[in-house]
Image (tube, rainbow, N blue to C red; front, side, top):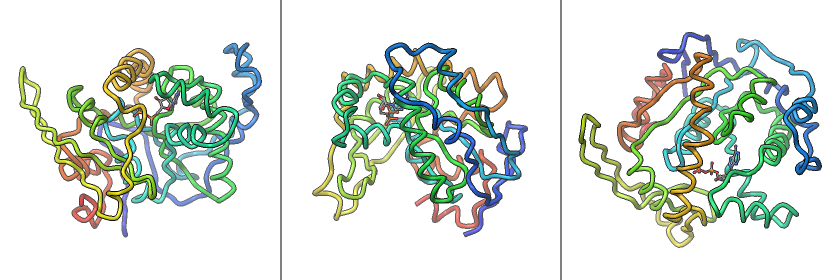
Length: 294
Ligand code: ADP
């Protein structure tokens, strides 16, 4: 499989796809963060517990990308496809939270309550979970990352900015009516973790906004008996997640826009329409684009 990565459209920074060991700067910098000071967390002391960053030039490491976008937009779907294509780990903080929530750890019940209300987990807990994941990846020799669901607050973005250079931030966008329908239609295979969707979305264009059609994404027969819904994919909780995204995470888009790192991508439809266009927007030449869209 040949993948050629050139500069994403509208982004002038140089990105490369050289295969180099994962920069350990984030995990090292985050590794000193603990959950102990949660209650009396203050911004200055929080920053001071992060060791000095070890930055690497983009040419000496793999890509370091971030995916932003509202709940249900498809961050996980596209980040995971790119991760497979580029051989870079896809790290979704939502998955890390769900793993912890389903474990027998001490944080489990606390996380369940927060997530099931559609609220954000504290920056400190998220950074601790992310540090552990990055350290585990580093030990396995992972290189680069595609972050999905992080950063979600300005403070998280500042912390990330303080320890490493993000090359590119992809902001996925979709009309709000489609977001709700996609969250409500989402189904997950409890065995393999595959993500499917039963929603058939057909929203007419109006007031200059284009219409959008998204076909359902059916699960393969072997996954059908194991399909489950996320506990936070109810109408009430999705609405709260969207509200919190607008309040807490929308400013993160502006943070990266101001730094010239934001690539805006309006999803034109489902995966067959959107995936080839996303590859094009990222200036990724994939010799097998048609197969990749399947
Ligand atoms: P969404 O579909 O809302 O984007 P995710 O799977 O990314 O959902 O996250 C699920 C939940 O995990 C969030 O609602 C939030 O409670 C928690 N979470 C995930 N990432 C973060 C983060 N970076 N900061 C705070 N909370 C997070």
